[in-house]
Length: 122
Image 1 (cartoon, helix red, strand yellow):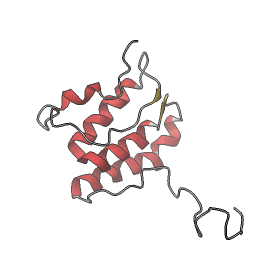
Image 2 (cartoon, one colour; image 1 turned 90 degrees about the vertical axis):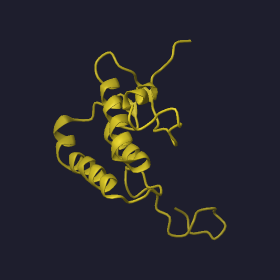
Image 3 (spheres, helix red, strand yellow; image 1 turned 45 degrees about the horizontal axis):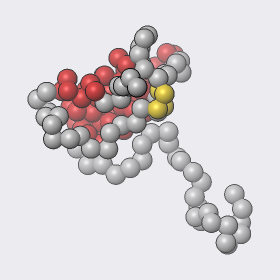
């Protein structure tokens, strides 16, 4: 990074500090538990399983962000469906976490979030 005062860089900005989502979220016990569990997976089993995810972001990064944004229940279901889509015969490519879940996806019907990330023909 240059040291010029008019270079356009923020002073002290060194880029991303983590591969996981850094945005704001409510720090509820369920979210912290879910995010901690995913982070534990990333630090331990992820190196054993290998980097074979066909999506961007990876499935664990997706899960971390989904739980942080939507809570343990909805984020957990989004993550489960994402991992299923990543399997053989599944989808590939960019698959971001939805910023907000529409009111037509109630908490008591988690199977409805399956449609997020599915590629449509056409």
